[in-house]
Length: 294
Image 1 (cartoon, helix red, strand yellow):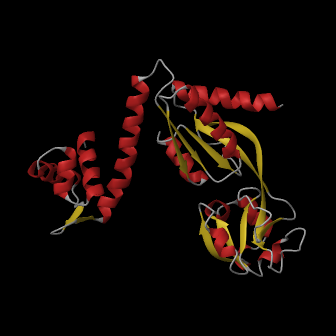
Image 2 (tube, helix red, strand yellow; image 1 turned 120 degrees about the horizontal axis):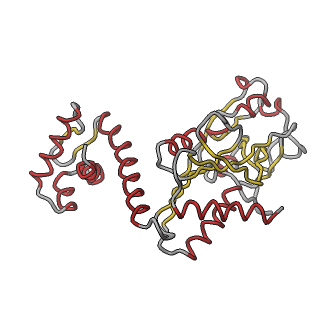
Image 3 (cartoon, helix red, strand yellow; image 1 turned 180 degrees about the horizontal axis):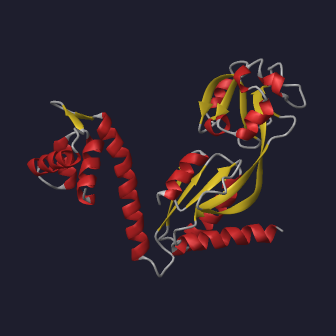
């Protein structure tokens, strides 16, 4: 597969119409159709269902789209970093879950962008396993992971000072709202909303002792929209402290767990890959930020 053909394929995915994609690519429709047909023959699969007005992806087409986007992103990143290998330029890719540690990282990113305007920053949300996979494949330069850390992986790591303390957010009218802390039995009585990261967390499973007794009604990657659901009923939103900023006027409150669950934050990167200049600068500034606080 050629990168050029993958770019053609992604253009058709975006436009959902071969004529429109051909116009955007500045090539003829017959030429584009032929390139796509050759790609299908090379792969031995059908990538599109071809309709009169619009084409749709097959299951194999969706699979190729996901991986083609990663391949093109990696190619673009490699080209940019090689082109600017002797100056602070290029692109920096960071993956992170929802954590207060992202504030320190964004402060560093802001510093870099202000002083090196040619640098482009890309930030992706995801859980730890997703971030680790993208780092291993070269899609991300760095990732911020929370909770237990697998030291068998081929990652370098830097522990960040910020820790994540678990608790729940409930409405101030909730039966649990006046309690000073929450024990496992409390969460068994009410519908629970948790992050996908927490659902896979050994720390939380060990704390609640019997996860099967929990009534988990929803999961999330980003918690902001879930607060509106919590305001409507007896839901408990399990979340890190200070991840949602609750104003004094808010009808929501945060209650810590007892015993406490603390997740540590780590910055990780691939130990087998040489960092670009901008990635080395980012790591240097982050280390200095941590050192200056001690």
